[in-house]
Image (cartoon, rainbow, N blue to C red; front, side, top):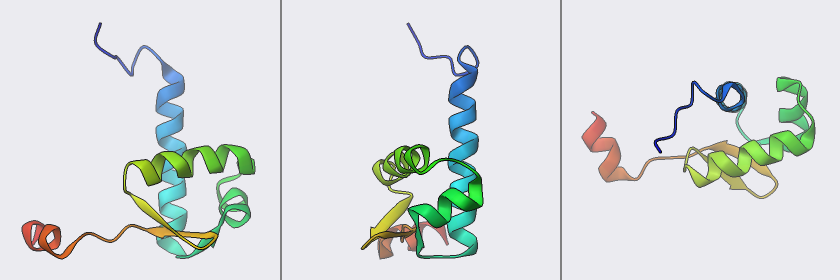
Length: 81
């Protein structure tokens, strides 16, 4: 059975939350979990779960206890140009 994200509306909500988190990190790099939680109006546990997913997808990096957008390796940047 193929996964259909339209069948599970909660999956879209998670994607929206992760997009909000990415936007918050893009506006102000090196945010901590409580700072992100305040900006996106979610509890710290929800934010931590979404950050884990974003790290797994290589979209963000943890620098100590703060998070920043992931940097692309040099060869990937050349391909995108």
